[in-house]
Length: 511
Picture (cartoon, rainbow, N blue to C red):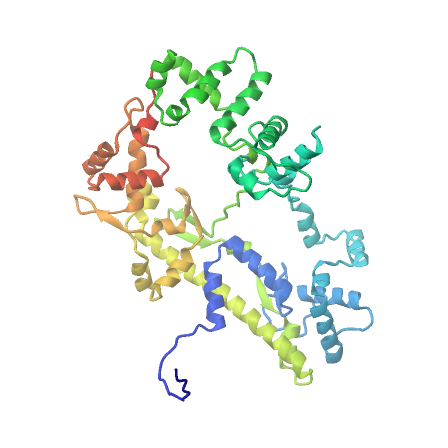
């Protein structure tokens, strides 16, 4: 084998994104809430970026202004350091302060001067950051922590307690034990001082199911989960409630219940359809995910990025951005002046200049985001007028590439502009991306988007006779009568995307 070295020349082209362009694309893709958070982070980390308070000048043509928010941050640092009078004109002190901050940034970000805060409170002023922190809900305990807390108060021996703690670690967010016992034994052979056997594991599991609340926790599947809840309700509920029928249906006909095969259940149990439906109504008290009662899913609030209203005088729909939720930003006059001051120490001047550049890029990126988003929305308003007039059944196909060509921008820019954005319209809150989809042509030659086809499908299902629900082929036939010619498999795909069950599960049986 021979190894050789040599020099070669190669001609090629590479495309690299500048940091400023990358930041601009990131800002464009953020929703208004995410952008708020990003701005708050930048305000904390960039000394040259200021938030304009009400009544304060937003321009940066007053280099001697000393009333910006970052001035407050500088004053706080003076109190913390305490051994020097830090001012913008004293470069040595400023450099020392910057080094001090870099080493103890977390302390600066989280420590408040008690004297300063107390004085503000005595003067009737409110500290907005402290008020915001006081209004944040405390993070609750996890499901595992809550179950362990309950388990610690049960009267069991040490071995059972140790095995129970291991079992709780396998309980998922729904409150179910979704790992089989053999696997648990294999993974926990070495609990100190505990002989883990199938018998001891099942005994401990039974004790967990009996002791932990709400009922159904630590069940091995949904069927067992429901039976544990029925057992608990039989002890607590009115004796006249037909829980025995519910138990019988769950134990012996669980799969038939899931598939809505009620006539088969009636034949095999000799129950009337009314009795079966009464038992099913009683099952609505049960919960397939009891763990969610202890740790409910947190739903993030949706705040629209765009507001659309109808203007009667011009007979047009008008869009406005919710940029009023965003703070007004400016470059700190003091630091902008410092970045140009030749008398300031070069390292300090470079540090300040870098922060000024970063703040300028951020402000420019936000302005570009607002401009691009509004341009895209205006195209949507002009191309989707019938949606705003008549509803989702009248959505038109609108490929992003068409919008990009019309605006003279890249299709990726359009995609980022509509990502994770919501629009408040007279038709309700709508994700902006919904307006962009392909479509088909009706028999009359009219273009209809796939979203409009889905809306028609839902409308057909909602209007059907629930005692004789439409099959997928029948739905396809009705769509063809409306001029939409699609295959049955496409109906199945759209029905599943809309969360609509098949016909046999939509049927309602009469006695």
